[in-house]
Amino acid sequence: MTRIGITSLNSILGAPGLAVAKCLKMADENLDLIGLDYTPSSPGVFDPIFSKVRALPPSLTYEYIRALKLIAEEENLDVLIPNTDPEVVVISRYLEELRDSVKLLIPSYSVVEKVKDKVSAERYMREKKIKTPKSYIVDLKSQKLDIDLGYPVLVKSEEGVFSCINKEELRICLKRLRIFGFKNALVQEYVEGDEYSIASVAIDGEIRGWVMQKKLALSDFGSTLMGVTVNNERVLRIAEDVIRGLRWTGPLEIEFRSAGEELFLTDFNLRFPAWIYLSPFAGVNLPYLLLRLIYDNSVKAAMQKVGVIILRTIEDKIIDFRKLGELIMEFSSPKLFLSHKKKSSS
Amino acid sequence: MMRVKPKLREDHMQDALYIFDEETGYIFELNSTAALIWDMIKEGLSEEEIFKKLREIFGEDDSKIMSDLDNFIRKLLEYHLITKE
Image (cartoon, rainbow over all chains, first blue to last red; front, side, top):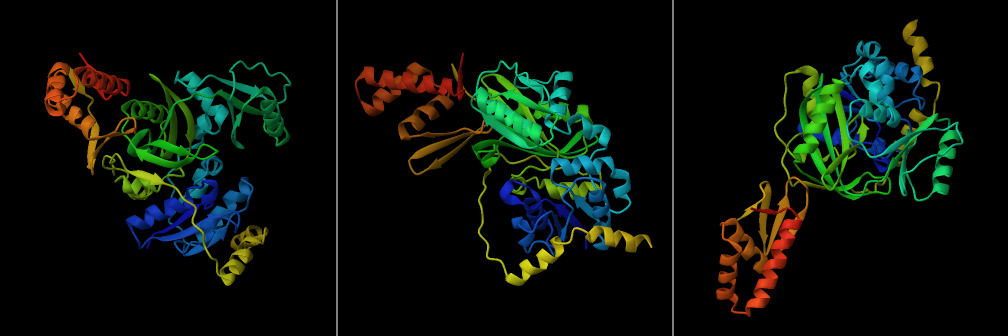
């Protein structure tokens, strides 16, 4: 039985881990799924789809890698699927070390660093002459704010994407990021228009399967509440060029906005998107494709079906008291990984 | 000559025709009269031929039929559902 570790189960905050698990189970109910998260307040940790849930350290330092290695060994994980951008960045740095313990499908750090955050991605796209909305990379230490974009603008950083409707809001937003320790942020023109995103799995720059959606309704943070699969050839062509140029391996979501005849690339996500549960219903189960590719890199998915609609909802759950107790025990010991490390190295 | 955009999917539900644009994700609802004109465009009829047929079917005054047909075709062009040569 294949055992798969899946991170980031906070579906309320748009983490795709639970949706990835549902896609995998839909394809093969015999897969044994282990949930990995930072907090017992993530709704996914209570989902019976996971045979077990393990706690990860909250900081994305080397301790996180050590914890992943240890969990992979203790739980006999065959495959690990990380589901947040910062996780992909830190794992890519220690990819070879982790591969001794578990199989992964993500690129090396030399690839990831080109698009590892919003500012790096913008620099990469400028270098490759890929059309993006007009943007400024702001040095947060500087008090100068020479930005000529009109309002609203979008402020993009690892903290998230914020919309600012005037200069005062923009100043406060940038100040907040400076206080949080960020060095720079991307301030981007807000382009009015239709939004598209394409989720894909690639091997060494070649897309092996993709699903494309138009966003029909958005949350306040810009994530999909409702979407429909479409086949926009311009979106696909740009995505193929970008993925080929990066020589990307693994899951990647690329977002676009169209304004009249213009098409702007607006965002990269180095993982499956929150709406990935749409993919099996569109005929291309991308998480399962990833799993198959790990064992056979010649696999290629079929063409997606268009017109399939996803509506994302919040599901209320009643939690068994004992289950909560078990999880609190699992998540409450920050020294868990250190003690296990001593045992395994003796 | 009017041409219907490729990659459109049609679904009839009760009296309405729904057109889904596979490229843009837009969904359009056409009532029975609009759907009738849509079918005539797909058959390759010219505006004049469609006008004559509508006059036969509905028997309303020419100016109303002409105005409705003009407006409908303008909307189809605006939403890139058809092209005109």
